[in-house]
Length: 483
Image (cartoon, rainbow, N blue to C red; front, side, top):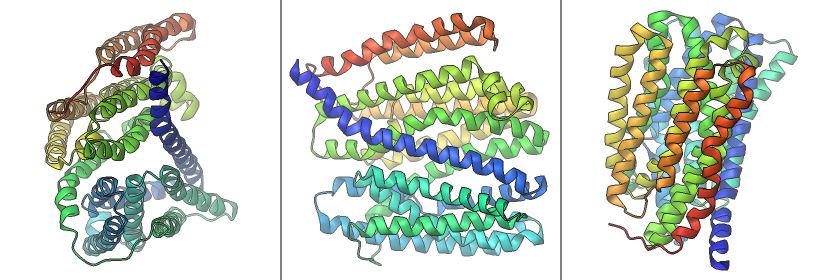
């Protein structure tokens, strides 16, 4: 009994605490972003805000792709070589130098296409200014990867939080000084990127990082296929919005964006456990500690599902009320979109940190195939559904493509490593969640059914608590092996 309790306490120390730090920082980061957007909308005109969104779409997409998968490769390589300080420092130095070079090359290429990408001549100056932030963003991403690999999650949380807070401070100062125009968000964004890059470099150099110009062949061999994953993220984040805007205009785009912003809250906890699980999984695999790896994997799933369920139930059972409270009465009609998107993100968390597991195994080829799958599926479904169903079609395309992506990774991970398996309890909870959500949706968004909704909430939640308590104990007596 004492041994089983020690197992639980060990898992809590190794996963819950760092994941809680990252979840808290993600929540604060999202809150800062929300407030920044709200203040910005009052400082500049609708047309100027639209221009900034256009600039941000191009620059953020370029930033996600220009590092060629190096941040993920660095996180894994450092996690594996953590005890070899000389090798760790070499990896850090090479990645910083080459990520900066790739970002500069990307910025130069995009600058030549400025007129084509942003359209109006008056925006070219601001576009060039934001392109200057690409090398800074690359340094931030590499610094974040280094801190993940070293499992310095508190520093990573501070780094993640710095950029949106500085952006928010810039917007508030501009509002206080009665400044307006497109220069307000652009200068705030560039300042946030620059200061955060300096902070990130400080964290990295605290661990010792001599700059090296030697070509990091192994890092690129692992990281390049992951660029497809970054491209998949860009497609997932922008294709449906852009296609919806071209087809129906700005009104459904606003509703879809509001629903997506709230649904993304469901991913904060799961994303935090992914960040913690990748270096931990790589370390345990490297030392062939498959028993501990199995417990860690299931514990990560159960903790993520447990912490997320109250939030996702509120977002689905009272979708209209939540939208009205956060975005205004005009967004209440997006309740169905919020229900679809929140359920999608939650079911994906039930499937586990599979992408992190695949990357920890070093199988970036699987990540490449899965990314190509989700890109093709998202584009095809978007083209087929959006013209007929509008924003609901975009939400359905997101639901199916995300689920397909994670199912493919789950099956691949099960085939590669038998230690990383789901329990029957997870499957049961998935079914109960769908039943609970369906019941809440049928009842509608009215407060007269509050007690029934709470009972529906308890349907999967109470059995899950018991399963969550028993899983580590059961695993303690069950030998597992890797295939």
